[in-house]
Length: 229
Ligand code: CDP
Image (cartoon, rainbow, N blue to C red; front, side, top):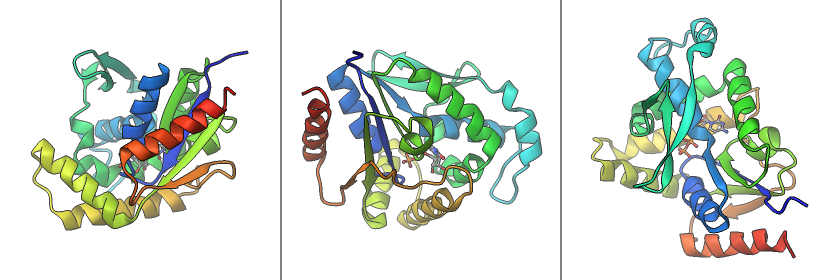
């Protein structure tokens, strides 16, 4: 029996999915994959090539250029996590800006983009031992995942967390634009035709509006350990 399971963590933006996913992957010695980073990197590529802006989206040009996008995660020993590389260039910082956040949901709604990224994500998880977070991991990427979690929190709490993260990075942003972005992405991600953000029937929901990281981590570890007992 393969004793390394597949863990899918889906949910709304800024629900702390990646923080918890990294902790879980670390504890069980699993691979962590941040699928959102891949959508962000494709968005950065589209932005840099003028295929997308706040005012327009050139789906045809982007789709025609998808074959020119190579994504990879490279482990950074100093920080202890994998960073996103786009065509060989480290874009880990650039993909986290508010500007990319304001464009990413439009790009992620394109079926051809999803098809490419889902295929790459499925390859990464083929041997199990993976914790992947995103929007469609338990529904589309790994519908047979051994453990599925669905994270939610109030929009206000999520925007507060993201606002602090961006301020800590030194970005010049306002709370109101972050709150708007969080709500706008919720709307686009949940209503798109292809792979909308929905809770899989067999996912366990965590509302972490008032739950600290330690409590979530302990609860999730108990769920993982139960899979082996
Ligand atoms: O970090 P945050 O929770 O704000 O978002 P993310 O995980 O970096 O994802 C950024 C965006 O990528 C989402 O708002 C979705 O539009 C898209 N995404 C997706 O469509 N499917 C995924 N599996 C992951 C992300």
